[in-house]
Length: 119
Image (cartoon, rainbow, N blue to C red; front, side, top):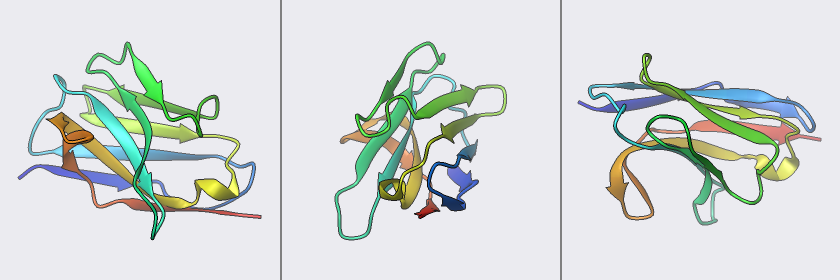
């Protein structure tokens, strides 16, 4: 059974930092891209960042460019999201996503981790 388990979410003040981690099991993702999405209840899911299978290419949503950094460790079958200069509008549930392309993301999803940015 494939599982993606996010961790590292929590409550942080505006301007602060958090690092999210996503640990994969049941399948290796060394040949797949990995990504982070986020969702605010009542709103559309938003693309945050993605990283190629080797880590050589990264892509970011416009709202997080210059503040967030995605990385991966294929030896650990994991992907990370370093979030700096957090803003109130970054408050959301963050989801790890990986695998072969499916729809507007990839096949496998984690259950999400809550990030709350306070003033």
